[in-house]
Length: 146
Picture 1 (cartoon, rainbow, N blue to C red):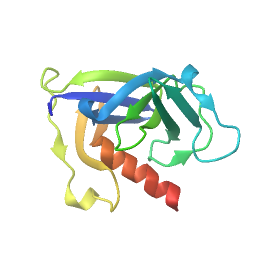
Picture 2: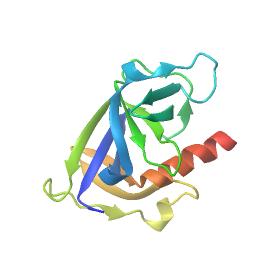
Picture 3: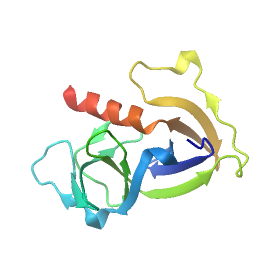
Picture 4: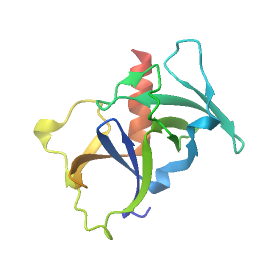
């Protein structure tokens, strides 16, 4: 695992860094088969021999049932079974060493049980969060179970 390379998901006012090797692929929202049933997922993606449910998150990482028109991409996060997709407004590949970025562990006072966020990072005048793909998948699945 190369700790320098991340995929940055940008949605609403949230900047979320995920290790690049935990991302299956980046796709465009036009490839989503939209869900009209009112379920938590906004749709599904079928392609590249994969089938994945796609979710939309708010800036506080709550699940939205409707996708804002600003969302143009989705990232498929690797899982042991089918990947899980998260839609976003923009996506960037970032080498944090090359960009001279310095992640800081989340202070104990800011830790929330079950939260996927493990580190903070200041990027382009924005406080950003770093989380593992597996932790984000677990977090989304936990929200679905409630």
